[in-house]
Length: 119
Ligand code: 5GP
Image 1 (tube, rainbow, N blue to C red):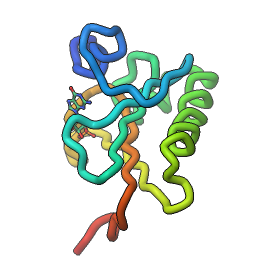
Image 2: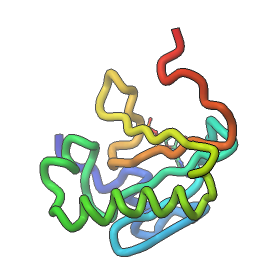
Image 3: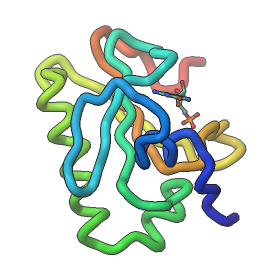
Image 4: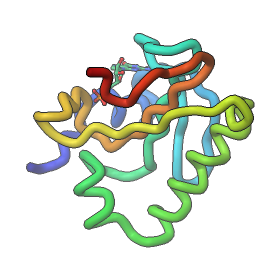
């Protein structure tokens, strides 16, 4: 697949769509999910055209990969969710129902999140 530069997160990154920003540095942008599934539901996206974890881990430069994952940890600390705990999740592809084709990590927190895959 080729990265689609018209996806909503690309538009948020280039400033043509608004977001409720919580963090930004040279590598990452974090903002509140528009349809939160937990009291805290923040999305962290890398500053680069990568459509999913597979694309990002295969094709992004090492400094971006390091900077991005450092930023995810920093976002969690700034949100104040490290003590009680949080869940990070990334959907890749059809079976995971990835909706937006720009790599992103979800941070969920603010309540007990239950089992990862409830039976
Ligand atoms: P995915 O299923 O791709 O892992 O998750 C995409 C997430 O992006 C969903 O949780 C959805 O609510 C969120 N989302 C979709 N469009 C927008 C938007 O325009 N702004 C924000 N802040 N979140 C969005």
